[in-house]
Image: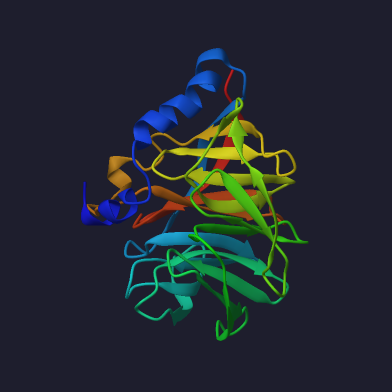
Length: 264
């Protein structure tokens, strides 16, 4: 286990036990659908990017990275992995998830309780805002901003003021599902990485119920690691115009376009 994983392990204790408990019911009894994947395309990804947030807008990939002194918000050319534009975040902050709303990018930090708003075109910082607790992931349904904080709750934030409007608890087979991390809005569902596991939860945003699992076990094959030390799966981007789904991870040298196949 490398030092980057040790940073995240401070967030929660018995990870494997909790995940096994959360996943046991759907896997054992088939109560919730499970989706496997087919890799459609593989693209380069910056192996030094500790990926925290990801989204696609008009064919351009936007990414946030973490770690103190290495946090940034960037525009990336999807098919080449080339960083087109980047804004570094002050060294005292551990950057977290991002999402777009109108012509702005909203971003979080892990434990500083400080968020940032960037101009989407220039990536220049426009303002800061504050929130209680930790910041993990962000997404937008087009009307509101949705936020994860490492617990089983998803917060709804009001655009503009970023004030919290409500919280919904995410449950899987009636049990709270915590460690919800990077978020993405996909055709009316909220997709969430479960930190430390190779799964994505598909969530009904109104009820908070998990309606399906995406099992990404074995996605990053040994030959695609290119000798790099990698961290956990984290990063979901959905191109709603092209209806394409992309995933990556922290320090992964590859970005994957995948298609989902329902497990029989």
